[in-house]
Amino acid sequence: MAGAQLGKSEALLNIIGYHIHHDPCPILMLQPTLDMSQSFSKDRIANGLLRATPCLAGKVKDPRARDSNNTTLHKIFPGGAISIVGANSPSGLASRPIRLVLCDEVDRYPASAGSEGDPIQLARKRSSTFWNRKIVMVSTPTNKGASRIEDAYEKSDQREYYVPCKHCHHEQTLKWSNVRWQDNNPDTTKYLCDECSCLWTDSDRRWSIRNGRWIPKGEFTGIAGFHISGLYSPWTPLSDGVKEFLSVKKNPEQLRVWTNVYLATSWEDEGEQIDDYALADRREPMETIPEEVAFITCGVDTQDDRLEVSAIGWGRDDESWVIDHHVLYGDPSTPQLWASLTNILSKVYETSDGRQIVSRAACIDSGGHFTNSVYSYCKKNYAKRFFAIKGVGGEGKPIAGRPSKNNTMKCPLFPIGVDATKDLLFARMRIQEEGAGYMHFSDRLNDEYFRQLTAEKIVTKFVRGYKKRVFVKRRPRNEAFDCMVYSVAAYAILNVDVNTISDKIRSEPKEAEKPKENNTRSFVPRTKGFVNAWR
Image (cartoon, rainbow, N blue to C red; front, side):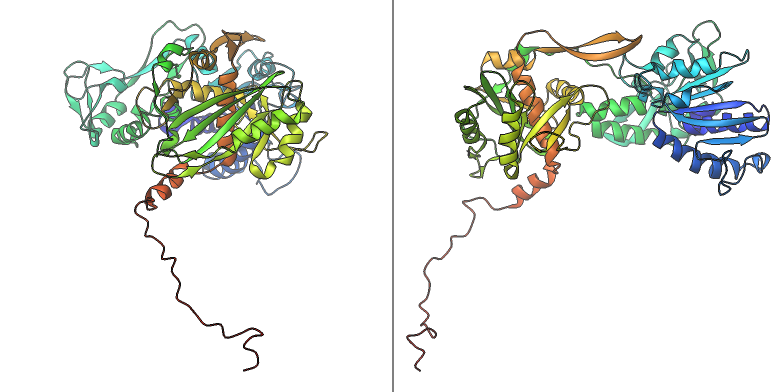
């Protein structure tokens, strides 16, 4: 219950404090990365736990005392020691016997600690010499089918916290489906009892939480599992959860975070593949660019006999418009093809409100057989924001990373996290209502474009014994999807606030409203110069 009311990190601190005082033993705290563990150990353990708890005072040396037994990541106390390591560090998980293993935020762990395998299994091996070992795993869940904590919970007795109704005393778990509010007003939020349909106030809910109990779903087989959500928080009113939900419900990326963090449930995509016919039915006329478009970015895919280019406009809250898709046939090693690309990337578009805009940035794929040609073109046109990119697979990679010049041409090369970008695009292609994140498509796009755009699907595979979500082709050609990925990467590299730009455009007077300039100038006699110098 400590984990439910104090938070995951505070619950782990309570476990550490208990064992330091009552049951000293070797303790291993496993964090996703070393940077997180340093912050946790120095600020939370040394200052927050040891100094604030009288029974622990003096058992661990003052953090200012510098010796091998009191480092940032390793502290010795009578009868035991605590070591804090990152899940990405295989050396920290080796050569030490551990009785108490605390694994924090396991869904954020890398798939492998270096090249030595699953970090949880490595940590578990450290405790094999103890008959009374204890392994604690806590985490906010992530994606369904690839969540470590969800998999571990399903192997446990699956305990849930049941609370009684103050009015009818029926025991129940708190569910989001029973939260009620009126007219999008979070201040009217109440909770509906399963049994008597009475609406609870926050005061009633807190009373129920104080009088609740853990009830397992299955038999105990040596693993106790606990699940609890933000609905049980005694400090956070339900209205705060509703307010956050209303602000993110139309944005799948933000809704995913809210589902993981507040409801403590894994996120399940509505579907693992996108229907190309459904997207094609959304085509709309775009004789001129919609006035909502604030700027344009382009993505360029490089093939052996052609270049393919997509132009995408961006508006408020990342609403987007796929304006056009071009296929330029030719040899990428010749300057003629790159000259044609320059014409496309420099094209001037006119919006329906009379503005003229051009592409602000373009990302060009440097993979394939014409890497040096891409480097040469992008280095020469870097001032125009034509960027060379290289896709990088794997979870946790940012959409656009820091550029490097570690290549023969010394051209700035941006690494692009293709998995993160594709996840983003899959979520946005599922949005059905116009507004935040919605994707519009021009009627100039043919059916082949949509087949290429939906040429990949997400599957869950087992790699080295753990689940991993990967993108696989279901059709041979996916150039349109790649171009869209690169266009999103160009947007990420720009790192601009599209809402601010949209507000600025909206506040500017339209062409018809601008006052006409008076070009007639009054004659001013010339008073200087060699003609009048004699005066």
